[in-house]
Image 1: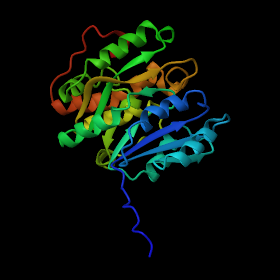
Image 2: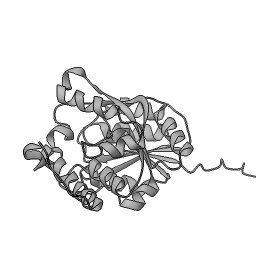
Image 3: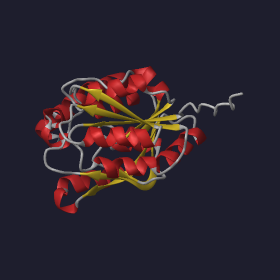
Image 4: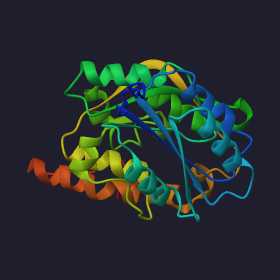
Length: 264
C-alpha cells in the first residue's frame, strides 16, 4: 500500500522576477526570497532572452527548491515577461522583485501579514535604499528619500501626481486589484507608474511598511536610466490624463500659478 501523499500547498503569494542577462546578481536577489521556507510561496523567475549563465543558475535552483518556477521567453520586454509570469501565477497575492536588487528574508512574510491584517489595503510596498552609493546621484537620493516618507494610504493618494510613489520591485498587491484595473500595459510610459495611476483612479488604497526591506541596485544601463519610457517627458505623459480627469471631476475653476513650462 502506497503511503499517503503529502498535501499540496496552494501558494498564497506569487513573486514575479523577470530578468535578462543578470547572471552576476541573480543568486543574491533570489537568496533573500528563498531564505524563508514558507511553502505557501512560489517564485516565478522569467528569463526574458538572457545570453549569460543566469538561466542555468535558475534551472539548478528550481531543482533544489520546488517553489522556484523557471520560465523562458525569447525577449518580450518587462511587460511581456510579467504577462507570462502572471499567467502562470497561482497566488491571490502578487509580489514583484527585480533580479539585480536585494531584499530582507522577512520582506514577503511581512507584506503578506500586512495585507491579511488590513483587508481595505490593495497594495503594500516597503521603504527602500539605493546602492551602491557611487551610482546614486543627488536626484535619485532625493527621490528615494521622498518616496520613503509616504507610508499611509492618504500619503500615497496625496502625492500620486508628484512622481511614482512606490518602488516597483518592493511591491505586493492583491490579484483582485489587477482584475479590477487590468495588468501592466505595454505603453510608451513607465509600466509601473501607469498601474499605480490606474489603481489610484479606481479608488484602490496603497500603503508602505515603515521598514527598509529592499535594496534597490542602480547601475549603468538599467531600464530606469536607459529606456525612453522612463524619460521625464514620458512620466508627464503618464500622469497628465489622470490629473486632468481628477481636476475635471471637482467641477471647480483651475488656476495654474508659477508652474513654468512643465505646469503649462
